[in-house]
Image 1 (cartoon, helix red, strand yellow):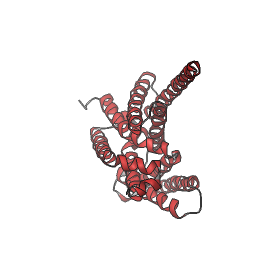
Image 2 (spheres, rainbow, N blue to C red):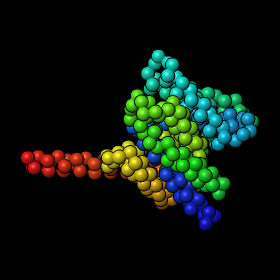
Image 3 (cartoon, one colour):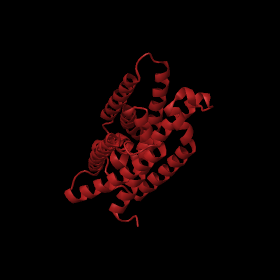
Image 4 (cartoon, rainbow, N blue to C red):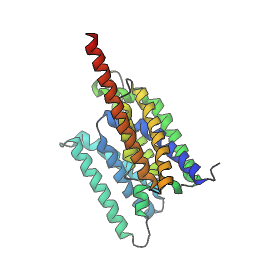
Length: 274
């Protein structure tokens, strides 16, 4: 079954969507869209150090993404600057350091475009198994911490009063993001993973009254974006990763139009009911 490259691409892309989109809901709820960019940019440094040390790009991405995410949590607690400023500093610093390290590695030929934008059509069977395994672990952990994580996202102080260890929830969450970035790198690329984290979640928000429904809808929209993007890539010979993001953006526009129309219809019915 996994001998066909299109089947491998579809399975890997759907696996990434199913895990990235529910996690992305928390980024949308916390209004921390730049957080995804920061962890994704840090991944390039992880690629460079993974190749340099011989542990491999995926392991390097996971380690560096975790380190940067933990630094973010620490700086937000002790720094006297706004959160978006800290995110901007870490994001561009990690990206620039990664590019500098790669520039010094003249003895290694690195496919920078592949890491930045991904190549889902080139994934092998081992990549598919990595995505499936990583996604299963992340979803299991997310299901286990769902309620306390939602509580910590809605109101930190109230969550603390209810006995939720907010600091632990934040650390576990950034670890899950690190895993998603690491397993998604070859699918949609370092620079595009943020889009898959945010766009489906934003598209689902207008149709969701509960966190659980928004997470499910976001995952469905993400899967639709993967299928549509891969179909467009094969039909018009466009890059697969960017095509998936464009498909997600198109679904966002459709969802925004439908949500606006429904809101207008409800408002009109309410006025007539008076």
